[in-house]
Length: 431
Ligand SMILES: [Fe+2]
Ligand SMILES: [Fe+2]
Ligand SMILES: [Fe+2]
Ligand SMILES: [Fe+2]
Image 1 (cartoon, protein in one colour):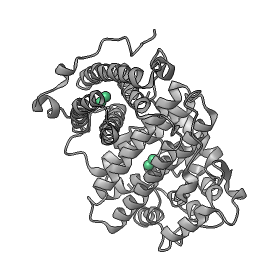
Image 2 (spheres, rainbow, N blue to C red):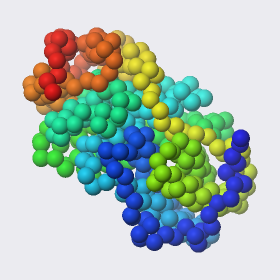
Image 3 (cartoon, rainbow, N blue to C red):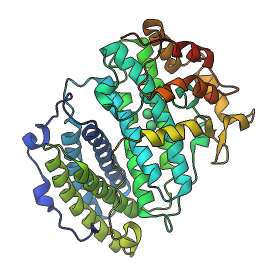
Image 4 (cartoon, rainbow, N blue to C red):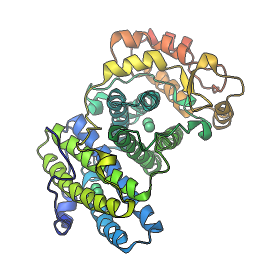
């Protein structure tokens, strides 16, 4: 059944203003919530932050009174939606537990999108980013155990593997080569545009979360690990946003933002089982339908084009959360040694030239070592080995994967070597 977002009935603007109680009173139980309800909550917070932020940016360059009025009224609504969603997280959910949730979002969302992405180059970029967030989940999981004594499954509930990915110390690139080729707005599908905007919003909020919370722990090494991974999220925002056609006007971008909100809420509503969360997704979808329809009128008026040309006549589902272990393992085995190429392409470590621009960056930031590597050394010191949650076969292949991921240059003095992983693999994690 098609769902034409331009024709479905939304909630009128007057009814979108909510009380403080309604805005702030709901929160989930961290021990009972389904991990994918939590990933929806984390993602939709990022979607609302982006919606709000974009509207302020538009307002700062906009001279049209009608548009300014629409932006002024709806910025407040987006902001109140953000409060409701972000504050669903209970106060006893620690920063590290929330962090594991953020990385689970990144892994399972990117894997879903990669398999539903019609543009092969965009898909390749999703697969590339996927293995980096996958490694972040592994590094932070060590910390969640060391600081709070929880295994990652307390958060990811066995749905997402926790094991070495492309090592974080190799995620640091020259930001110029992070830039990718952008799609062509005239030919790219609505699915591609919504996928990218959803992921940009998610990555941006992950970056913001680490920036706002990475200092929450006293451990110097954990602070540095947050700083290191936060910087990778900065690279991720740069990479994914560069896929967007820069010639899209602000009105086209406004249309895409509202459409992305409609699609993501519709997707949440379709998948949700949680009785407290369900009415939120339903109500917020109705709000976004109204925003979208006004944005479509403004687009028509100022662009003199049909909004259907951009968003089509049906919605897309960018964020169906489900276990992606098989897919991620396949990409991991094939692409752990993949790196960014200098011509907006990709290459494997064996083909990296000696003058690769990212070597300079890796040497500069890693001069004193890499906190994400030291993390593994510290947990191995305490518990005989690293904490891994994956199938026996994949766990046994960890030293082989570590070997495959090795670069010729740009490795820090702390690098856990394949031989050390081999040694650890013979040990049992001491519970
Ligand atoms: Fe919104
Ligand atoms: Fe990440
Ligand atoms: Fe990321
Ligand atoms: Fe909106």
